[in-house]
Length: 420
Image (tube, rainbow, N blue to C red; front, side):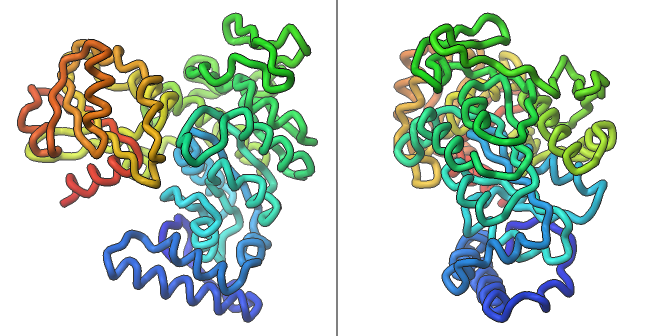
C-alpha cells in the first residue's frame, strides 16, 4: 500500500497471523489498482479494505514497533517528518509521510514497514485516543489546537476534553506544548508529560480557561486563570530564538531548510520526542537539516517560466503563520480556496484570517470558493484579481517569485497543474 516512508519490507510479513497476512495482501492489491486507475496513492482504500478483513490489523502491525503519535491542528505532517528523520539515527522508520492520518491510512502505512524499528505516525485529532489504544505508543506529541473544519471537527475545547479523557490512562510519554492552554489542559491528565515551550502565534481560540470557563490572563508568553489557578507549566524544553534549550539548559542551534518560526517550534518538539528514544538533540537537529519540503509544502517550482513557492494554509492559525514567511511586497501572491469534503465545507473561517497583512501585494484569487474569498478581500480593502486558472494568474502577475497559498484540496490541485 502506498503513502509510506519506510525501509524495505522483509521477513516480518511471514510471521503475521494468517488473517492479518490476507488483509495486508488484499489492501496492497486494492492500493495498486487505485494507483493504476489514477485515483491517488491508494493508501486510504487499501487500509479500509485491510481493516474490513481484519479489524485488529492496526494493533497487529504496530506490535513490534516503538511508536510515536503526532497530533495537532497545524504542523503535524511536518513534525512527523522531522521526528522520522531524527529517529533514523537509531534505526529504520516507517511513517505515513504523505499525511493519510486516519486509521485506514495509518494501517496502510504500517503495512509497508515490516522491518522498521520505529513507527512515526501522524494522527487526525479526532482519532488520536483510538489510535493510541491500538498502537500502545511510547511517545505522543501534542502540538496545538485551534479551529479547523468546523463542519466536521469538534469545537476546540471539546477536542481538548476528548484528548484529556482519551489519553489519561496512556503509558506513553506525552510531549506537549506548554504555551497552548488547550493542549496543556488535555495533557494534564497524563502520567508522564514533557512540557515544551514551543510558542503560540494564534491565541484566538484560547482566551477562556478550559478547566473552568473563566477568562484567561495572557501577559507576554505566560498564561493563567485567576478563577481556578490553572496555569502554564514550567517547560522542560524551549525554543529560544534559533536554539533548542534542553532540560540541562544546553543550547543547540536549529538550522533548517524549512522556513518560518512555526518550523523552529516543530523542530523543538521533535528534538524533545527524539530524546525519549535516546537520540541526543544535536544528532536529531543535524538530521532534520536534510528536510527541504514536506509533501510538496515549501517547494519552489517552475511553471510558465516563473518561480512559484507552494504553501499550504488550512485554517486561521495556519494562514497567520504562512503570512509571516512570504516575501514582502511587491511579491505577487496567489490565494486558492476550496470547500470540498477534505477541506471542510464551512468557509466561515475566512473572516477570521487577517488578510489585511497582504496590503501592498498584487493578489490573485482562484479556487472553488474564489468569490467567497473575493468578498473577504474586498472588505479588507485589498486590490485583487479573480482568475480562473493558475496559468491566468501567472500571466497577469508582475515580476518576482510568486507565493501560492492554498488550502488542502486546492494545494493538491496546484501541485498537479505545475507537475503536468
